[in-house]
Length: 150
Ligand SMILES: [Zn+2]
Image (cartoon, rainbow, N blue to C red):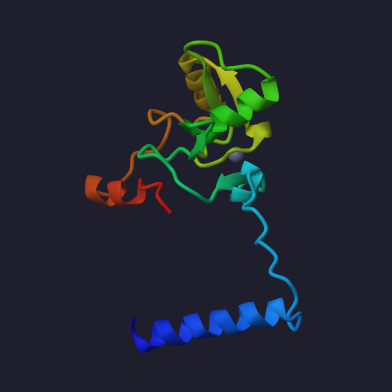
């Protein structure tokens, strides 16, 4: 045992004996870590002034928020939508973002829809890749921007 470890153990034992003698307040276990996923979201103001709730923890390689939920790794926006609807999403249905912000998990920005609904929503906002002005940057420069990992 190193001298530092010996000193740390001696200090722990001194506190232990002091508590036994009533000279220190009893040890209180730390508060449990929040299990409410909302604790892991932060409000972020978009360019248009709207506010997204962005996930601060893990994202998958596509940039969507993920967490372990009831023993499985799930996409958080799907879990949020399922909790709000009180049922699982129908087969083939997606949790679509009206804000097009992949790490966003705000209920007001999510709707259950098909891939076609999502494409129509995107086109209605003029956000389809075919609707944007051509990017003058090289593909390498564009790829550097496309990383959603934070
Ligand atoms: Zn959003």
